[in-house]
Length: 299
Image (cartoon, rainbow, N blue to C red):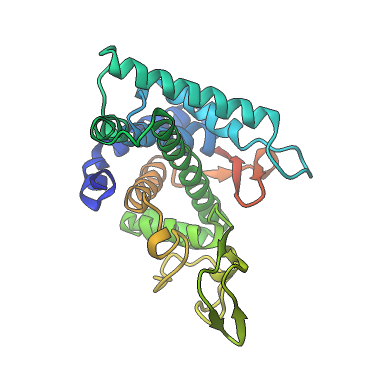
């Protein structure tokens, strides 16, 4: 899709950098803040709006819905009423945006514009399809990238020698981000159903059998990585599953990589000696997604 080509991601660089700088300036002026809720989250939701076609002025509202969508009760698997309500409210909001576009009350752009136009020539595309696609695009943009960016901030703080390298050479920001994704990718696992016989390492999987891809384990495979549990900015890993693989490779990988690098560069330029307060920071865990829900920093 043209919206997710490397050239499209490059075209968003200036806007991403302006947004990141503005957000970090606010945190710096206050002497600190929440790197997820005050920085990585708003930045990612704004980028999601530019891609999905949802209004930029609703970034705050969309950020709250996104975080509530993954609400869980401690120790209990499965969705909660809080998460379900947030999802329904956000879908109703998207449906209203589509209606406003059709009535000429607001311009259309991004994925929403593409889908509304495609619907005119393909009646199989229903409004429910458009709502679902835009919803998933916005949730993906506004949840996984902030978790990955926050993980990078935590890893750099916990490894001061690595952070010093990135501060001295901002071009290393992308490598720092990718190494954090390798170790702390939000999507820990996904399931697949075998469609053909597969034999691997002495194990045979028959068609119809269920398998589980443990991405977090693969990214720590000692046969692939030297000192796999160590955070090394200069690792330059030949391959990881941080953004998936093959036909399931992350659609927004190019956008995410540029966004992650910019987020680190702008923060380190303004607050190179930031500190993390773990007593005020919290992890967000669901059945298959993990990451920081709050990452408190002072600067």
